[in-house]
Length: 568
Ligand code: ADP
Ligand code: MG
Image (cartoon, rainbow, N blue to C red; front, side, top):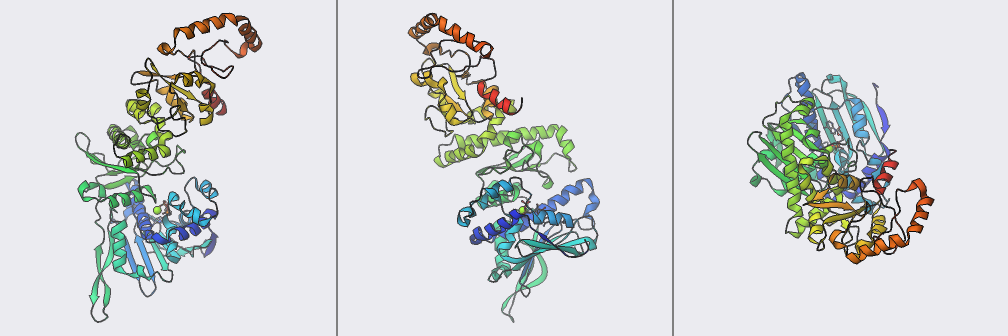
């Protein structure tokens, strides 16, 4: 439309604004980090579009971010010459929350602001954090490729609705103008703004410009000059030597690439030289995102070529089972005009991906095997958040199956709790004299696994059994048939052959009972007819009168339930 329109925010936006203002007040300066992060993303998006259409740069090819303030108007403005927003994009991106899982997140809130406030960190903040310090936000934006008079002005007081109207803007890009709340005048200080940028946004690869200031003796205050200066280092963080990067810088860079509000759990930064030259800076988040189970969700590793951003979510860089990894890969060898199609076929990318997988597995092994309790604790945390995803790797990544198997953690009858803390190596170290196999039971829930009648004989003999109750465990045990030469064996399949663990007296007892109860067994077989293959006397039960067993090579009971539920 050609006139000003008032539109309502999506319900979730209203809730988010409420929560955010409440929960982030003590850390409000992060709004600037979020807005600079968006400006940087907008420039990355422009570069990506320019791969297919170089004309899009026009005569404005030096991408940059500018931060300025106006003391008289009490405004702080963050500008970029990135991709910009069309009218429809402004309505969609600034009026709704596009993240999947948003609805579920908000329906999980309790309504108690204090309690809910800490949840906001899990969600990420972004553009709306402007309202922590601003009581009105104006966005003037012109989408790359659109004319000067086809710009858009978006404005809101962050209270349920926003207005949108046509505008003019000389060049492509976006201005976000914050009208500061009463009492927020500290953000009108060049010194303060510079210190926030250096603290949170130093890693941004584009220059962040501000006007130089100088002392005005007459006015007895700092005044801005017309000269620009770059406030950040404006060089790719990952290209700097490790020794020159602080923990804080690694953390802030993570928050930018991952769009996360929380600190990461761990990172690995490495330069690879040789046939392929590339740098990788990869992170494990501390918490699973809402769309972890959506296999189409973003993958989160960005691809750069010689420090130039190429694309987001380069899914060829990370296998699905490591889809929680965030970060960047910067290649020295790929062509700058590389496309997704080229990546799919590229042998170079295959080698880079192989290298990235090895680094991530190495990082996880470092945590898991560490002698440092804090690092080990990190692995436990990792496993809680992402263990179920990592398990997929056993079936997905044949080359690294052994390494992944070592990283797996299970519940078992050893502690008999649902905590998944037992590694296969732990299990093997506790195997009984004469025990040849690694025993496990799968069931729909932990309680069902723990109470399975199949466990009775194992409990009696003190043999540990892994208690598996994740759906993915069926695929794990389907792909992982042995570990360190020990076969994995379901206790619910075939005749439990306890081998050397069985004593002769017991074997004789079974044979005797089979004879003695032959008539009864035949009767039961007759009554059940086609429903069963066989009815046998067994040693495996101590308390229960009977149980169902699958044939060694048949689909197990739990898997057949899962397949049925999936309609197969
Ligand atoms: P996120 O950055 O995680 O996507 P934000 O809340 O920070 O979430 O931003 C929401 C969306 O608004 C962005 O995804 C982008 O589409 C749009 N946006 C915000 N700032 C800009 C900008 N400076 N230029 C272009 N688009 C922007
Ligand atoms: Mg953002």
